[in-house]
Every structure is written in structure tokens, then in C-alpha cells.
Image (tube, rainbow, N blue to C red):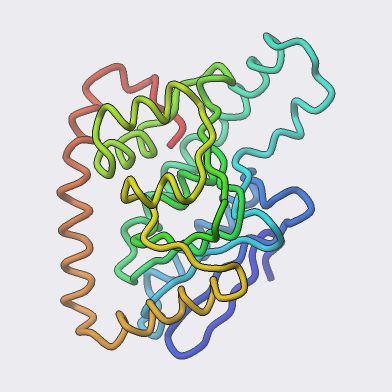
Length: 243
């Protein structure tokens, strides 16, 4: 049904798996369009109580599909092409990520490997993040010549504070799941062979609770965190196209 996702359902839990492992599950327009379609369907699905998001193969999501710059060696031309592609995807990324973040269902990222750029941003839209040991995370946008977008920036600031968020975004350094666990960005670290089991166990613990109380509490927390994002839109919003 979908080219970029598999969708499995069991006992009120929906598992979405990014399914382009040969390219480490990259983000392109088709993937974003499918993600938005799936999210809109979940929004109206009373039988879905929790959503697990994971990746096929050895990566969660490698971020933007960079096939457009493959073979381009000039750094200025690479930056120009990347910025062009990023601008085309910006609105779709912003809309689909925000829709997913504000689903009433509990969402859990089961991070099985690399989470790069928009892939890390995608994980940040989830309520919980469970990762395997040594999973690598980084935001390469500044090194690619573009600012990180408003969505991921505001989520990072709300989760780790201003100073740490600037360090992550501006240095473009690579971090491991163990680093992020100590900063509160990862809820738990589990061996690869039990990653999905751990995500399902957490989902099962949550879906037995009153759904209105869970949804209301989640959306209240999200609304409080969004205050910073609303304030940031008054400062050169054109800089923050890519969530």
C-alpha cells in the first residue's frame, strides 16, 4: 500500500516502519506525503491507542534524501542544491511532523540506528524515545549551509534548554544514545533484540489508562512546550523553514 512504510496493527497498537533500508530510510517528498496520509488516518482511528515508529534495517531515519547532490563535489553547489530541496519540502515536513506530534495517541520512537537531521527531528515529535546502545544522532544542517528549522529547534530547546540546544545545533557533532539518555532526550536504552518488545511493553502500560486523560495530558504538555515556538516565529521566521 505504501512505498516508504509498512503498517502493522495488533491489540490497539500501530507499528509504523520506515521501509527503505537500502538508503537508510531517507526523507523525501513521497515519504512525507505518505506520512501525512497515515497520520491523518490515525487521527480519526478510535481503535488505535498507541503508535510505534521505527526503521527497517540498521537506521531509524537518515534524514533528507541527498541523492540530488550525489556526485556534486563543489561545496557551494552542494549547499545550493540542498537548500533548494529543503525549501520544497519545508511546508510538508512542518505540517506532517506537527500532525504526528499532536496525535491523541501515545507515540513511541523505537530508534534502531542512525537518526540524522530530519530523522532526529522525527524522533523528537514522539512522546517517548527508546534506543539501542550506540545509536548515532546528529543535526548536519548548519554544516550543509542552512539553519535548523523552527520545529526541531523549539523541540530541542524545550527538552534540553537553550545552551545545550545551541551546542547540538551549531557544532553539528555526533552523539550516541548514551549521551542523549543522560540529557533526558532518550527515555531508555535497550538491546537491539528487545527494542520493539520494549516499545510494545510501554505502549501496553499506557493504553490501559483512561484515553481521554492520557490525550488531554499529552496535548496540555505539548501546548506548554509550543509557547517557545510561537515566540520564536516573531524573529525572522523565514529562517526556520525546515522543521
